[in-house]
Image (cartoon, rainbow, N blue to C red):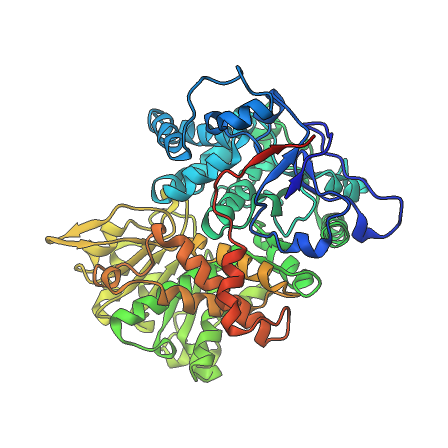
Length: 608
């Protein structure tokens, strides 16, 4: 049961009890709710899936203006009488199913995807339960609206479409008071933060304050995809400034005006934030999102053992891509240790995929020499190899050794272009994360198809306009033999009368399940082994029917089932690694299921 206190609608207050015992601190569970002092923390921990009823002293329009309590026309007649709502609503009482139908009508009437995005955002601000019910029941249609590709445009237009601020903004102006800032969050038992510094938003670069659209969108997918309760989630923008002059010149830009923090000042800023998170939300997981590669690897390694955290662009992308490769191998009947993978691009995404693929090959029995000869990467300056100066330490991991160069006959052509490299390396898998449309050329795909019966082609860049090639191009250039998955949504392709279903290598198949499993298991660390487990589990979720049609990822319709299975696998991994709760095998599924929230209205009772 949740009890409402007398608390300002827009400024949530946290309070301490007379004692210094932190366990007795009042804890907010919605923008205007708090747990009563008599409620034990242990009891609250059992409510990961949400409360079963609300008791409140609030009345009338206050309830309609709070997205956590607003039911619109779904308030029953009895609730309207008890809660002072008589006459404030039209006479009819609607079921939530009818409300969903109406909202879909509103959304579909809008002429552009950006207008649909704005409409959905407004619904989230008005009625949280209804927003998530609409999203959960219509994910294939709405996922491209609330996240890629539409969210990219929303981030670019952020200052001009913002209606209501959401989340926490930490800037050089308030970092000195970061504990106070976090304590002003609308929820008290935060278990998951998605955090960005806005520098590398999708393939669009530095979008300043507009980057907040990404954490907000990601958390909507955590809720819709894995049932993590909204009151456990907090989007955070580390708004350290922007070097985007177009934004700074815009008089309506609403972010911190100034050049980006760099060097030690930047790292000191992040350090203060992380320490405050540990103090204010000691059970929270941090997901690092859309950081530039100059910072992403450093922050991941610096904090992954201090606070349970991960970088979705590195580790989530790695797991979903490897999951797709594993699924493709179910079609070809080959083993992971026998693959040769060529990366076009050597940023965080590609290096993360290469690391996790190496771990999978090693687990399958491949030697270090075999692994080193199986992975090659080409960045904007050419092939990564030992005879070339490479400044970034994370790239050096996958520079081909002199011995491997000689093995492939590359000693005299160290500046091998992608077509030359494909000719001698004979990759079975081609991965692109360049944000450069057209990076996969006809000549590259045709050359690859000469050596491989079923080439795996993965143009991963998003939004759609940044894809390295289209699925139609990959299939035409490979004679219809390619197994194609893309980072952004594409329609299915018919080639010579055969339908090819194009699966989406979308991180949404990984991070919700990993997050749910990490929360349920109360893990102290999120390690790479867990992402390898998630990749294997994802591959097992692709149905035989979809594999027959060439799809190497599940349907988005299946997202909750996939997330549940991954969460259970993560709970087992945490337990076996002695990093968190010990939950017996026969209790894992029930424990994970009980933590999953399904968006439904709960009774609201008047407190006398």
